[in-house]
Image (cartoon, rainbow, N blue to C red; front, side):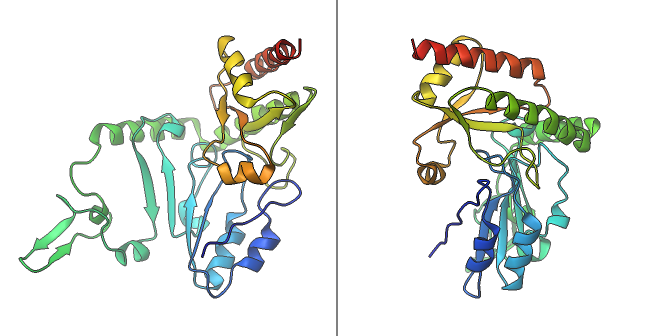
Length: 272
């Protein structure tokens, strides 16, 4: 069966628990590089080292890291790394899966179709080498071109610069939200050893996250509300939803100030 990892005191992954859970029976470790709810940046190097020590494979969700920081897929050491296009200025409906070539060569195709076949006989078929083995049929050509353009755009800025700016504006967001009375931010602070992503999932005491987001929306402020595809985490935190403000390279500290001002007026509206 699956084992689920808990949180440490800063609400990042509990690495002591992780090291104790991974053992000879472990076959696969699956986790995210950066949490889309807690904002914590996970210690992938240690995670991979511990998994490899017992012969386990590692599947890494890098959707929240690849658009925001320099990522060397080979240096991370994971067996598979996935990321999505629309989080990095690209079109929707496409992403990528990077895999260690030795691992990919050992895997059977998951879908049949054109371009993934090598030879077809009446009683069996042989398959193309990766990556074509896993790309059956007509690909999402336009989306792939758009994703390539997004990669070129971010590369022209420089991922070191992207990360530095997000650290600055993300810390500003965290600190400004901390000033709001009755507001609880989830996840570690920006001063944590591995830093924090430029997002804040939060709740305001006595006000549902959906109500907060709805009123902010009328003021032109876009935050997401709900469980952010992390329902088990929300149950662990004892909440049924949270609001999340997420920043990227196009956001400014002035917009953060506007968020905080409108959030305060939203809170006043519900507490009249």
